[in-house]
Image (cartoon, rainbow, N blue to C red; front, side):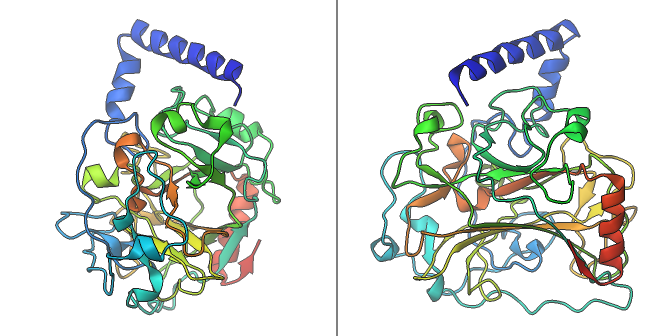
Length: 395
């Protein structure tokens, strides 16, 4: 983003804040509401990250010990077989001293981690076993910004870290439902949804485009931005029932960009390597992958909707995860579950990569997260639901 455009957005931010003040403090109230949400304007508290937690099939198994409630209300189990000592030496690339993390203890050799992924649970006769894939590319065009229109609408650099975007083109803090519906899209099927996530960086290199910019090097996010080798966006069904259509403009954030400071209750990160995904998933460790293997990030979004709202004050309460048996909470309906899977090549045996984060989040792997606004045309959503409920694979 050029400096002229950043100055332009700074002026727009001032206009938005002034308008809020003129309306009796609405702008300030918005910021207060967002204080504890994922990607909200940054907080100053800092806490130690909980220990790692095993599982992938359902992020419920990745709730940290000691948390009263996780995203799915289940307690995680301790990571088995990890050996902290000597991992930096085993990595081909060492984490540089610049920036504010990660540290060697944030990495683990995946070949030394005991299997922690349970066998997939079986669905019942009413299960919706199909899958619908939307193909939106890998952001090879380099569309990035450090906004978050869900949690900090109208606030430039509201995320304090940089996001990759696929789907609707031109999404930023000032995007509205109307502009989203009218946007061009990178998706091949006309899906105008926006899918965005914090970038992954190779800290052995330099990203000149944002080396001194807010959301980039100026806030500790250093290194070359990596383009995913693949970005899979798949909607799957429920193990217990048929799914209903998502409402248009439903907003979902999964994971927590401040998980280490917030106690980890909403953490939903899952890191692995190709060839290991059905055996090992990591929540609070980055994997050191063997030669020939790629780093994998997986986000499984909430799959239950309250049937009324497309957003909520905390940006979480209107959606929920199914329980360990695949059932939604009382009053919630099963909707297609977005499973986002990103892979990255060139990082075998490396400990020199990190996910972008708030400065105080120290690039901890458990702070990984994803954001989604559904803007599929109604006909496309209906097609996805029919495909999933009929047990087919489409897209």
